Image 1 (cartoon, rainbow, N blue to C red):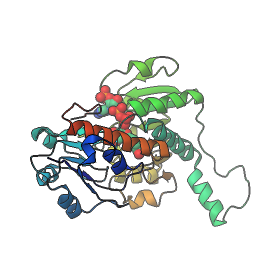
Image 2 (cartoon, rainbow, N blue to C red; image 1 turned 180 degrees about the horizontal axis):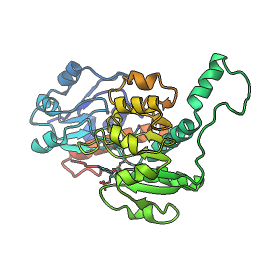
Image 3 (cartoon, rainbow, N blue to C red; image 1 turned 90 degrees about the vertical axis):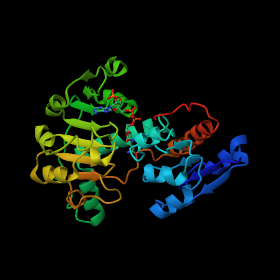
Image 4 (cartoon, rainbow, N blue to C red; image 1 turned 45 degrees about the vertical axis):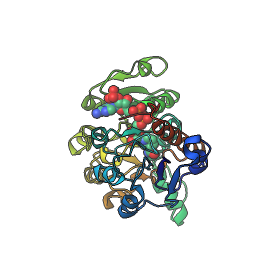
Length: 325
Ligand code: NAP
């Protein structure tokens, strides 16, 4: 019997060509929703009917309803993305469906964006650049555009995994003291030259000049940074999020920036993408980017290759390399 494979969006790197190049994909029925937007729920439910494998991207919510629409033949959901909070892994487990992600290939690209945000937020680049574009700059003055120093200051990485470690490694160039949180000890990060020290979250927030969020979005980390924790942070601190929007209570952050509870925020991700909380959108001390963390040619092409490889492996009945459930 030929397999039915559903790719839910346009992806760089020719996913259909890669699937067709493999014996399993050669004769498969491949449904490719080749659109550069999120498919509607109806399009998604319709497309997955009878699917053996689904290759979704981060905005697709793959829950019990989608898995049941696919039916009992569904073997694998191969997510395009390292974060897989869009997939109900418990529903997958109950149905014996494998779930995979695309780690590593996007680590450096995302860590670069974290640093782009750290530098831009600390120095107020968004406002400065906007005023220059708008023609409202009045010429150099010592009291203008005065930001925060970074060299020798303290960085807290919340979630010292692959991306968190890459962010920390870059901080060595700024001679920063590095603190981290994670549920388990990370010996690689504790070695020289990073020399990271594991702390409790509240302790780290109180000491850090820069906080970089790099944990996955789970039930434990939803609104991990809320009004109380923003209140623990230093007034001069910079908060950067390249993880997932809902790790921060966005309304609380908007209020904290308005009240000067912290100095600035740099955000690549938002609670209700593509919406941004109006208090963040209109806040000049929030440097914001439209979820571009993994957005380099090598990362995005590599993610397609990994997602296709995982999918084919799952269809062959193997244990795919990047299995997360
Ligand atoms: P990873 O290697 O799994 O790292 C995540 C780390 O977070 C792990 O080391 C984990 O360690 C820690 N963690 C888990 N739960 C935690 C908690 N409750 N408190 C503190 N730390 C916790 O994943 P990664 O490849 O670095 O990716 C991290 C996240 O970045 C992804 O999940 C994704 O959502 C996001 N991301 C965003 C973009 C973007 O475009 N902006 C791109 C790529 C990734 P323990 O298990 O020991 O706690």
